[in-house]
Length: 109
Image: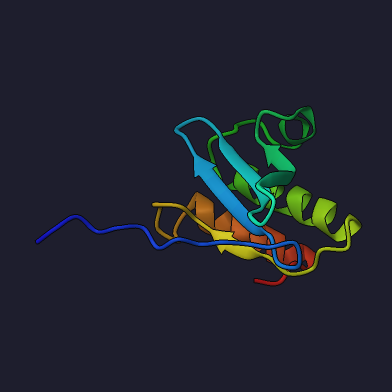
C-alpha cells in the first residue's frame, strides 16, 4: 500500500482558500487567492488582538478567537464564502474550533 496523497484544494478570487496551520504553541490562518498566488488576509495567535482576549495561545479558545477575527476581516472585504483547507490535520479539536468561530460570525464554507 502506497502513501496517501493530499487532495489539491484550490481557491479563486470569488471563493478563496482558508489555509490552516497548527503548531504546538500557535495556530495560523491565511486566506489565499490561488488564481494569482496572493495572500489576501492572515491571522494568528501571535497577534496582540488575540493575545489580549485569551491567556494561552495553544488551546481551543484561542483558535475560536482566530476564527472569529479572520471571518470579520473577510466580511469587511465582502468575501462571504471560502474553501476550508485544513491541511493534513483532521477536522477535530483546535481546527474544528477555528472553523466554528468563523461560521459563528457568518462565513460560509
